[in-house]
Length: 279
Image 1 (cartoon, helix red, strand yellow):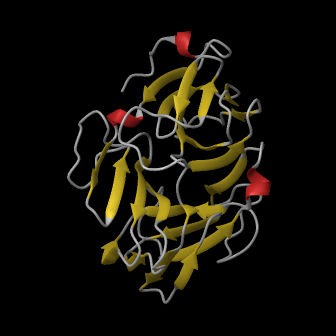
Image 2 (spheres, one colour):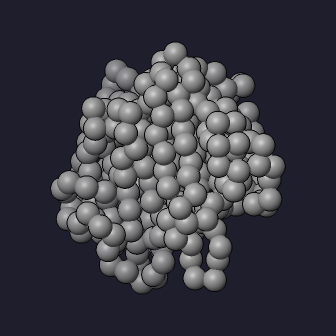
């Protein structure tokens, strides 16, 4: 995936390169109990162009039917976080954690040397909709750890709020529960916003890794209006004054330190958007 894409998609900040990843291009499947989309190669979906992006390995947008879920399975050497959009998600793991996650919750598992966990929708009335995100750790062999954070809709409305950030960053606390971003053992930042029509937010790229001239970014518009495998519809945003994205669409981005991603809601309803910044 090249960072030399046309700058006409980013007229406000022409140094930033954008490459769209449209809803219709994502992998995924309808398994009955699970409806899922894959931004990167995962399970039965494989595309050599989309294996990972920087240290970001997985963005799955999942909907799980009542009473269904992912049985106990193992992970190691991966940072795994869940962003709950609606419904209730039960997390149970080999570290002794048992928790029901709801809208606004962020759950982060640093798998380290290895954990086993399950994720179920125990609610017998409604589907759970969440994003499952994996990032590769910067250090191997760490002790497994678990964290949860909660961010209200009010906190995120028309503001770009950092919900996950690297351990050691300003405002990041290595506490199981608490305020501020969830701590991740990877050089990846996740921000979230709920944008009202006509409103905009900006993200400023951080410093690139040693020997690099740019950082990587990814913008994802959450599919809040319902499951849709066709052309994206619903909430609509414009990135850097050019590229327009609707629900389920995303975009890869490259920018030097100080470059910006501006996201403006050009639709008629609030749009929930995730912004990643990583090496």
